[in-house]
Length: 478
Image (cartoon, rainbow, N blue to C red; front, side, top):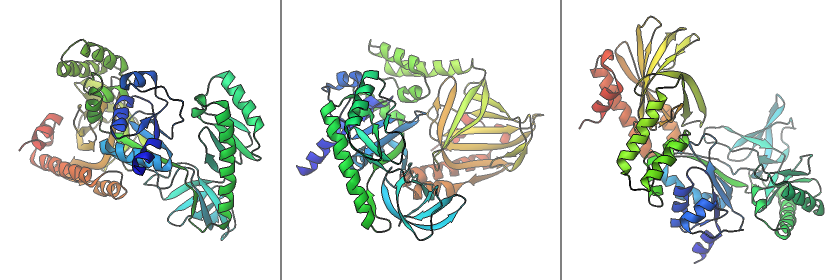
């Protein structure tokens, strides 16, 4: 009963294109969804709530996945539920805005290296080696990073406010607080508080709080801040004296989410994939027809084919390549449609083709082939005169395909062929991603086996016979 009681204290605000599917998963696991949109309230019969959320789940800026951020233990529980439908997971190694006792171990170039016990961090101040200091984890400390980014602008969270030490402005607002009257009321409320040298940042939850509750929250949060600073005076090196917030980014199995959403409301296949690349109108119209009895499979394929046909009308299509290991988005040289799910990418600058170790000259080009649902993208590289230079098979999540954009998570491992010699490259990067907990052992083994099959195909076929269809038929054979 205590265990269930803790769960009932978790209140999750869910926003973005994945909201319906994620809300169902959370409700099915006994969690509360708070501050829900009217659409979500209507779909699930949720009463409008003025309770502040303890965790927020929202789209990443590029909509390739979700961000989970909030009260540490609550955020961790939400993560444990949602990671089951994730392909990659990037979890901050230290809580965001955790306050930790550290020791200066090196100084130079305007900064200091701080020993945090299990980790080290960088502070943009030159301090005395051997001195002890309280530091704030200023941004998420992602799995591939060796050093945390630290600050002495400590942040303490309340329900409606965050107190920040060391900022000159006395009152700041979440970008979600846009109502002028509310802002004026919050400024007046801030003036009634006595938080000395702490800045008051009003969180988005202030849009649903009462003035009495929020004034009390300032007082409670300030009391907490004073207590944290006192604990810091006696803390040991590496001791976390304030837990901050849980932070994680998950890239998602969108097909799985489509089926979860379809249990709530008629949903076309590829719903989340198409929405993530801006094909909202196509999806909305398709689901309008679904609700009127049209066949789901046929309608879904029609929506997908329509988007691909519109891609063929574009001058250039963007390509977003997201590293599984580093969670970085690379915008590759865009391509001109030259066939069904084919782009021609022409290179303007000299260099070397990655993985092939072949010289790249201005005017050289790539014929790139891809398809919905396939975990590979085929690149065939040519010289400006049409001479063949090599093959690069990228292993990735099935790409999200819109008329103007292709996006995928690169799984780091690839297969190349130059002069008839095929080899697997960057195995160590995939293994490192697994060691860091970004991908599971099962995902690693899947892509290792896939790479071996692709290598076998390239070794047994002439380079002129290599097409995406031929590769797929080979790797899917019994």
